[in-house]
Amino acid sequence: GIQVEQSPPDLILQEGANSTLRCNFSDSVNNLQWFHQNPWGQLINLFYIPSGTKQNGRLSATTVATERYSLLYISSSQTTDSGVYFCAVVRGSTLGRLYFGRGTQLTVWP
Amino acid sequence: GAVVSQHPSRVICKSGTSVKIECRSLDFQATTMFWYRQFPKQSLMLMATSNEGSKATYEQGVEKDKFLINHASLTLSTLTVTSAHPEDSSFYICSASRGGRESYGYTFGSGTRLTVV
Image (cartoon, rainbow over all chains, first blue to last red; front, side, top):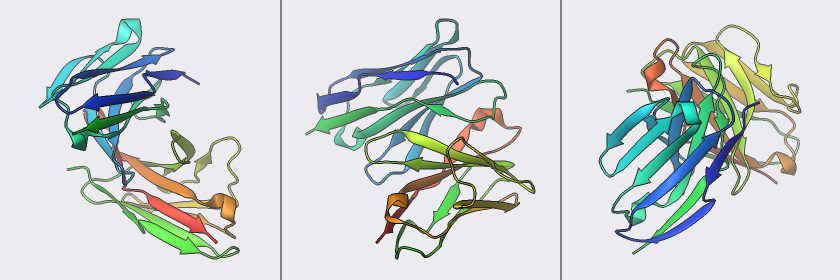
């Protein structure tokens, strides 16, 4: 299967700071998504971004498919941003199985 | 749009009993549903893929007789943990794809925390 590596594994920030999370993948993909898992376990879809750049409020994401990586930017972080951020990719069929990275555990302190 | 409802959110059962977890797509038809298991502080592990009206495809190492999956309609898939044991305690999450609407990607249920005592 495809390898998905996320960095850093852990990130601790003060409220208001900016951060960049990275996702590298080992093969070409048809689909890439970023998710936020809150402390209660709910996975929230942040971006569907197989290529290009998207922005949603304080969050933005960029995927450079030819270089096999994606970046998630969080600006002016808030305590509610805490949780685990997962990158997941699909190869082959665009709606085939997701391959998940190990996630980045983000903790934002007030 | 694209809401997936999963129930129950939390269940405690005795060893040897069976537990059923339901996953419903509320506002779309889910041609494919996925079931994941997540251990504390770990990533999601795919257990099986189910397509409406056909048998589920299980990942290597997942016991199909222990984890029964039924996808009887385009809006409902169920996972039954049969003869549960303490080692089956985990967080189970379902996910659905919209089929043909690639830009929506995947939507996840809120998860079920199973504790077997």
